[in-house]
Length: 155
Image (cartoon, rainbow, N blue to C red; front, side, top):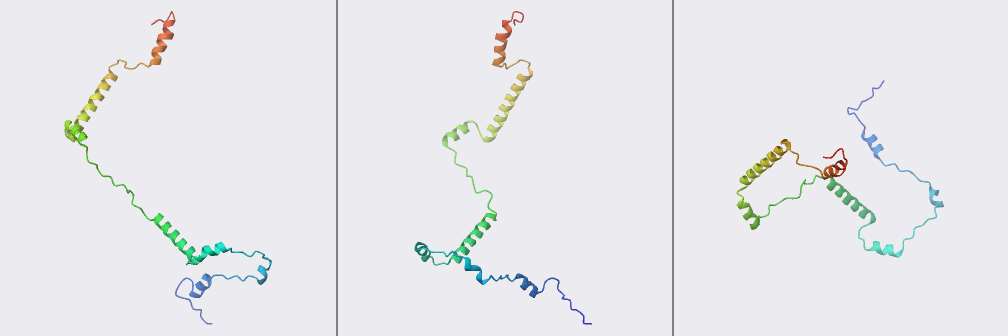
């Protein structure tokens, strides 16, 4: 009994791959077009438009497909994150003179922190002193009109 040869490669052979990748050509019956009555008519204006074109229709379609693929690749390619590059403008003489009166940057920053601390301390002191600093106008109106008009609840 003859022994069957096994191929050392796993996968498909070249013949099988060629057979599977070959396009399938279907034969159409000869009498298929006999019932078709439409015959396209290309007018003279259409012929004039195409006359100036040096490329065929298929070449133009291929060119458009290439442009489309190029555009898709451009959309997918990474772009620089930020295109804006800020530049510091020169200081006007008026602003420079105003800032020089207040000292350099570090002095101004130190003074700003001190004034903020003073304001915060004053607000904290007012809040904890017990004195009410805010009376809504609607409360005053309510007290002055409704409660004082009653004889038993005069304030």
